[in-house]
Every structure is written in C-alpha cells, then in structure tokens.
Image (tube, rainbow, N blue to C red; front, side, top):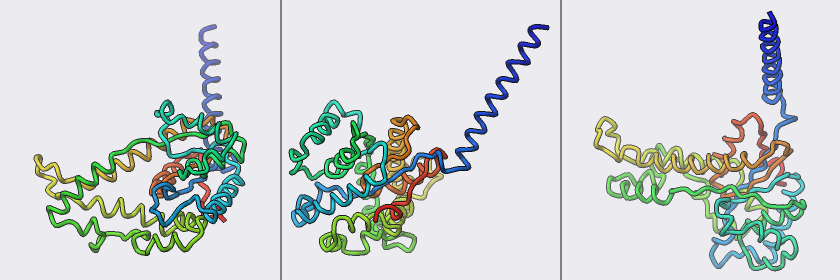
Length: 289
C-alpha cells in the first residue's frame, strides 16, 4: 500500500512540474515581455574599401560615433562581432578589447568594424568583454565550382541575373560606390539595412544560385545536379553555426543582445531568431534613426 501511495505522489508531482513547464513555455510563446530582444546590424567591411573611401576620415568618424551611440542607446547586454571564438588564442580579442577600454587611441588607425563599432559600443556600455560568433564557410569553393560549370554550360544568365527567373540585387541595380561616397556612413549603413536591400540580397541566393547545374536528376552518375544549391547550403550552414554560437553564449537572463556582421548574413540570421520563441527581433529601421 505504501508503494502505491508513493507512486501516486510521484506521478502527481511529475504531472504538476510538467504542467508548470508547459505553462512557462506557453507564456513565452504568447508574450513578448520575457523574450530577449535581438538587434541585428548589417555592415560593409570597413577595412575592405578602396583608396577613395577611408572610414578613418573625420566625417566618417563622426558618423561612426553617432552610430555607436545609437546602438548603445538600445542597451544590449552583450555585443557580438564577426570573429571566430575558436581562434581567441590567436586573435586575442579579449586582450585587445581591454587595451581599447584603457586607451582607444591605440586603435586610431584600425579600420575594422569590430574595433570601430563593436568595441566602441561595448565600451560605452561598460561591458567586460565582446563576444565572438563567426564560423568558417566554403562559399568561395562552391561559388567557383558553380561559376566554372555555368561558363561551360551556357548558364551565365543565372550568375549575371539576366534570366527571367532571377532576381537582381538592389546593390547591383545602383552605383553603390557612388552612393557610399555621397552619403554619410550612418546613412549608408541605414541603406544597407533597408528592406529592399536585405530582401533582394537574400533572394539572389535562393533564386539565382540554385538554378545553376544539371537537371538530369535521374542520372546516378551526374554529380552536377545540385552544384548551385551547394552554394546556398554552405551559406545556410555557416549562418546556422553563427546563430548557434550566439545563443549558446547566453545565460537567457539578458534583456537584449546586439550583433554587427556582414550585411548578407542578416536575412538568414533574422529568420533563425524569429523562429526561436525565446527571442524578438527588433526591426533595424525602427531603432536605427
């Protein structure tokens, strides 16, 4: 009889805990109050511009300071940057950040957006460190493989986005160099994160690249049927790894986090965070003003 009573007690306790857990999950799924806010900022790589554009120029430095303050005003609890954490032993980003906090003038000639934006935002918020989340990909390998196939098999219309079934990226539709030169850095970053730029950049991956390759799917020996899709698969894999490295460095007590990363990553990462019920993506155009 004692065993029966004990069994009933344990079963009731388990059921109660299960209901509590289910209730907590339901609450998170139905309300935004407990979700971690995600601030995503797509950027160009500051140290990869030609000689006509230098982010160290005074006018761009003013813009960078304005941008950094705008980000800091969102009060993210953690700042993430596009650097691989596995190579901290080589990059020594933690040590570099500590130096930056003490004397950022030492970095006055460093163009990288990790220092110019990531470090500056973290310092404004008195953060003890900056978090790294990048992951390697093989985009160049798969793209060159697909490009070779396209040239040899009359499929350059997918590479050049001239086929009826392709999408032209907004940054290919206009003279982007001219836009950058004639805009403040702040306004150019706003443009990079605009809906039309984000949507068309993502669409070019999932619309254009996947059409490259043979369609002889029923030929077991044809290895070129998914040659274009491999580009997109590798791109998605890299972004899933970046997303994973981000969420696994959280305590889930954070109210908000911020990531600055190459602009093409934004739509995929945004989708991943939007699909996770513990996060709320804040539209960039709503806060980048």
